[in-house]
Image 1 (cartoon, rainbow, N blue to C red):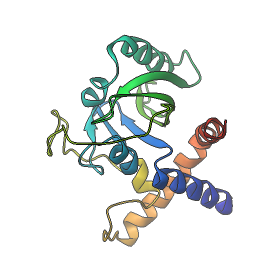
Image 2: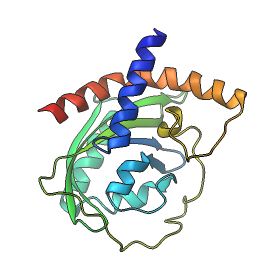
Image 3: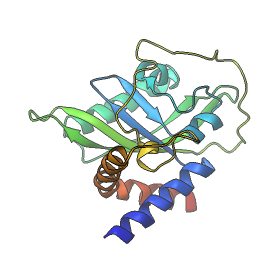
Image 4: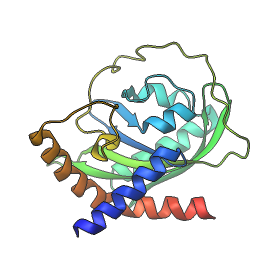
Length: 198
């Protein structure tokens, strides 16, 4: 089992490092989302390791696609669909709109069944190359900017800022949550990898 988790973790790490696959970690109560740093860099956004408000990302979805994307996410959050899946246009910082395909799954609910946390993947389907550029100011974006998420996805895979050293207790906590989360979202990686190969 440990070998299986390690192999899944290595596949995620490679996809994250190349930027072919964006990974996101959404916390509903905090109204924050954490995207994999390389994905944010490719889209031309500052603060690649920082969480953003969900409003920041919703504003970047094409107005004609926003209702459909949110409806798909809400249907899954309410338990009406087994997973979330949507294709929409996402405005980058310097390359205009990118056509992306996103999949996700609720991985944590409250005792009452309310969705608390959702993780997923995003693939850029646009045919033209990315040319990230300026346009967004450095610094905070929205009321939730700067608030930390507990173990965002890229941290679960050990992809934090270089030079960062974690304590033994923190490493054990990361390992425990990493194993739990990787077990729950392995099928998302397989679906995204199949789409990349297509």
